[in-house]
Image 1 (cartoon, helix red, strand yellow):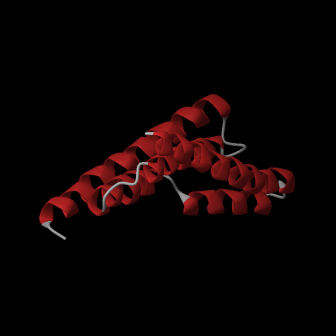
Image 2 (cartoon, rainbow, N blue to C red):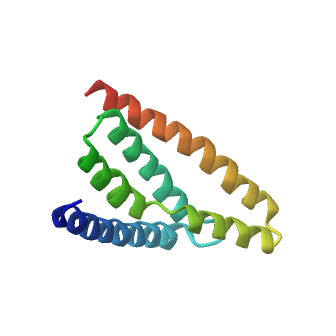
Length: 121
């Protein structure tokens, strides 16, 4: 891999992380932090984008930059798990279960919808 690819991963990944921080903060400011709506919005929107990119059948380097650097840095599995564990620890069992179920159902549906659109192009 050449230096341009690594530079792209670094810059695009950094931008994805900053965007995740901004989106999560904006959603949390409106909805509060009782339920991790910000992470849900980030992960569902990221699933749509990744599905879309998959449907485009990008080349190896383009897929790395778009999928791994951009979407991979934007979405966050670890935060989703941490927030779910926090809800369970606080004995908010229903919200914890809803976080898992809704995230999985909407995430898969979002990825499928994004891929369907990408396939059309």
